Amino acid sequence: MFFTFVQRVNALLWLTFGLVMAFAGDLLNILFATQYPWLTAPLGWLLLAYTGWLLLMGGRAAKMARPLKVLVMVNYGWSVLVILLISTGQIIVAPLGIRIAMVTALFTAAIGSLLFRHYKQLMGKY
Image (tube, rainbow, N blue to C red; front, side):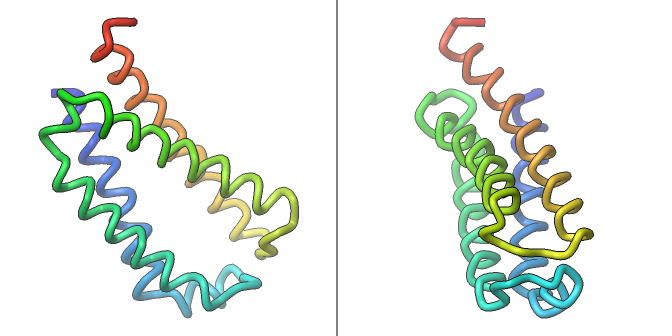
């Protein structure tokens, strides 16, 4: 029960990111003053495809370890990638964009930790 709630929140998070980046990319680029405006829409479509995969794997991921590992790695990887790219200056954004990116990185890391907890329970190590 708890896993399905976390998975729905995870899918909602990625769906929101994907829709905003794919359809409101120009507004985001103006608001955040991004350095690479051409990257926003394709990344949004990629996130929408990942959301579709999340919804297809809905019931299976609760019982299988491999899809659950992928979910954990994507959430942690997104968090680390956002923090590294912004803190090293590879992607230059406005201060508002930095704040929003760090909050989303924190939120995806929190969901990743909840998914990792379920993975450990599934493997019998928790």
